[in-house]
Amino acid sequence: MRSPPPPSHAASAPAPVREEALRTLLDHRDRFASFLASRVDSQVVVEELLQAAYVKALEKSAALRDEERAVAWFYRLLRNALTDHYRHRSAEARALEREAREPLSVQAEPGAGSKVCACLHGVLPSLKPEYAHMVRQVDLEEQSVSEVAREAGVTPNNAMVRLHRARQALKARLQHTCGACASSGCLDCSCRSEAS
Image (tube, rainbow, N blue to C red; front, side, top):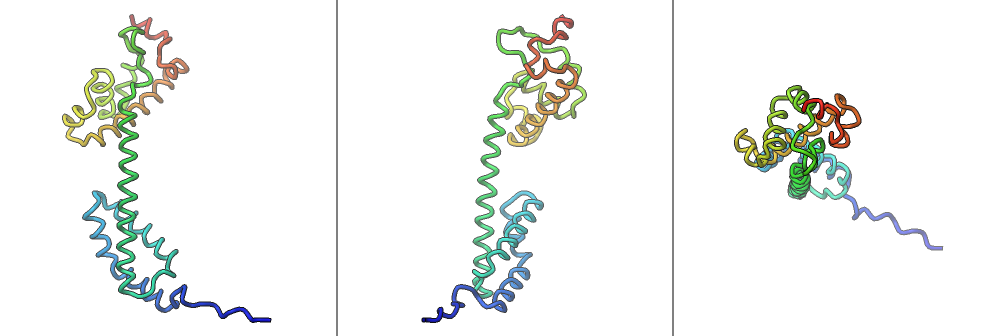
């Protein structure tokens, strides 16, 4: 009967090498943070990406063979994290753009009359001023999001986020005020006929 072969140590680096490599990565923290800060616009994102990369380094510490390669390897981790971050951000921006193009769910459908539920005008001032302004400009006055963004001095992406949040806040307030009719777009709302 043959005895099993001795375990191969070639697959993983000895613990002292890994510890030194990890220590080197920690020593380079400021350089890694600078690398990220020059590529993203938020210190919070820098910290999130850096912490996630350190966690991944700990999980994959067997891949760390020596100190010099560890730094290059960690930069690859950071580059991959940046790629993922921007890919996610781009997908989020596209989703927000689609949302901004959709009509406000509480607006009347075309042909249903030019009046908007009277409750809308009563609820709108209760929103944050920038939210109320965004809904008025985009949904009631039919200005483009990019035009409103330019006037407000914000990026179109920021304006789309603001519009999305404004619509959600408005919908919640209208549902609270009008009840069930708000969820159907206020088309059968008795307050609209009362305001006529």
